[in-house]
Amino acid sequence: MESQRVLSYFDEILKIPRPSYHEAAIADYLERFGTQRGLSVMRDSCNNVILKKAGNIQSSTVILQAHSDMVWAAEQPVPPGNEIPNEVYIEGGIMRTKGTTLGADDGIGVAMILAILDEDDPDLPSIEAVFTANEEETMEGAMALQPSYLDGAYLINLDSEEEGVLTIGAAGGISSECVFPIRKRASTFQHAVQIQVTGGKGGHSGLEIREKRENAIQLLVRALRSLPQTGWELAKIEGGERSNAIPISAVAYLNTDRPQDIQQSVAAFTAQRYSEWRNDEPELAIRAETSSPAEQVYEAESTEHICLMLENLPHGPRSQTKDFVCSSVNLALLGETDGELHVELSLRSSFESWYHDEVERIARFARFLSGSAIEKDEYAAWQYQVDSRLLNITQKAYRQLFGKEAICENVHAGVECGIIMEQCPSIREAISFGPTIRNAHTIREELDINSVGKVYRLLRETLHRLNSL
Image (cartoon, rainbow, N blue to C red; front, side, top):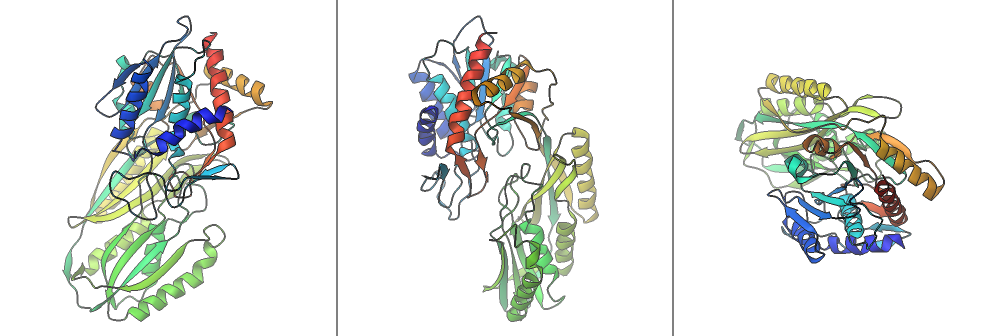
């Protein structure tokens, strides 16, 4: 089966810790793979790895690209360097783990490229295999690529997540980090309660932003607003997991002398509003439990500014058509560092002008509340090419293999194609496809095994057709 060769490499990749910012081990593995097979090997300071394999010198060189890092999420913390998917199993044709992310995004793309490089197939073109680092956080790896690294004219990215769908364009994006000073004072209360929002579905902040999924940070603030106006003090508030994931959890620590009143208020809030999310978020829960009191708490004005900010910052689709989100914001991360509250938002849009206007609007709001905001981690959009030879070849290959038409779409997510094409002008056309991956960036991530074989067949057939040009 086509999938077995790919899955054998994926099994090796699963044993290598590779969260974003920590790609050295996977880069070592890729280097060894290339060296053992006599391929041209290059590795840069960002831990990008490029492997080149000569083919038919009469054809155009094809670039195959996937990112080597993964989003790491786990129910239970693990020591650094041990971020390996837990108890991987296959059931009903679906690969899952127990309590961690799987890393099929984009480990399965890496495995497909390795399988192609290991093929003894004279009908394949020359291949430049590009494994980029830190895609999930900043796309730093793609941005570090230099024109001298690559000569290929066609780019096939293997980081899409639905078999039968060809990605032909993608949103660009930017992050906004808001910083607010916090004033504290000694607490006057002797007891404490922590209010936790847990169990949200979360998901990819671009691909699932239009789904009905609660933002745990904003839901927590709604719960705080339901409390009695007096009788409690905010000691700490934090939430979110990653900048590119819809927050699934958040927690606030309160000092109080009436913990039972706080618990009753939270219970009443949950009971009255449960119908809002019960059908879409069956595991979502809001709990108030007693905890240890903090010595220092936020002054009342700081608490009000925090709540006002969090309930008014944007989150969700900002413009959309019937079928497509054009622009969105994800209120992603919240936490305190060195006496300042940091809030990070991830913005995506098909239009660079929109997200620059939106980050400036957010900055004005931050300044109004005596805070500040900076832009960071901008990445380019990938504009759809109307007359693409690569797309035409891939569509025909899909039709011949599977007897039906592939779907073409622009995605509301960051895909490295736009950045790589901007960095390496030899590339004329690009496309992205991949097997079906569900719930990426969460501990419910799963990989459809049957789709792996189908996508690998499509990749090989597309390469054969490109070799004849």
